[in-house]
Length: 424
Image (cartoon, rainbow, N blue to C red; front, side, top):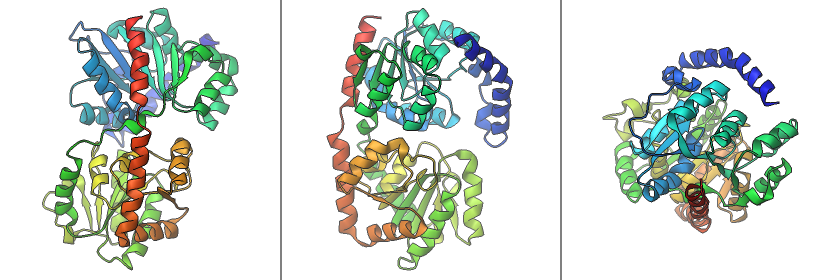
């Protein structure tokens, strides 16, 4: 079965290359380091043992933050290599870890590419975040005696059903993992139903609750807010997708009927959409400042502030009086609400939140999030939070408390990884 899987991947490899070239026309970062996608990476400059962490994109990189810092502290004689699939993930690695880890793109799951990559880095341990199950990668790791651990492991209902269509193959791939540290009991049950060994499955909790907001976040945010929106009520629409910005701007128009000086920060999820969102705002007659070119912009001159840089979203969350987290009005599945919650920012989300179902249910149960279905409801939620400081503070404190109460997954995962590194 793995042979047929590999054959299909080889047949699709030209299409994958075309995809990179096509994406590169809109985002040149996709054209960088293409050979790495096929396993060709530079020779390491150090002979130190390698702990390899794979985090597919921005959300997973963010979730890995505290874990990677703990690994760096606990194993100073090792290098930490962090791989991603997307350029936005690569950019987040650079901003979050500031050169303390090495970054490479994960090779496609082609046997020769994986073999070349593993031979060059020779890792002691592979740590994979969430749902990245690549059969050839896991097979060659096991053949080389490299433990592979899936942490913060999750299986959405849709992914689970997809794996069930190829149950025997999925079971063989899952069986190659040394351990699965699931983030919830439901996720653990789905991995077990796929054929995972119960002795190799545990529930460690959600690493995303262990987010580090930074000791000086509030100070930096206060300074930034004085620069871009002094004295004005501020809300942010973050990680938005196509079809959501229109609803956000419709809501913004409604909010300004009662709060004329309201200030909107909008942060599209994907860099290739920055220009589209900018022109969308301009066509509506709004004065827009772009973060990438906003030096000297005064608060009174701007209606909308477009966050078109990478790695700064937490800082801008901290500037806001309310946060709408995107990917949730559009049927994407939602994005991470824990980042603004950890900062005490009151939360608003759309109804499409399958990617964070357990977290959203937890927040709903404590009345720590407002769920909306359209622009009118979004406007009403934003207006209520901006006009009632006590309401905003209460909801923000509830969310922040829930984040604190659910910390601890990193400790559980580190205990597991310590055992793997002690007994490779």
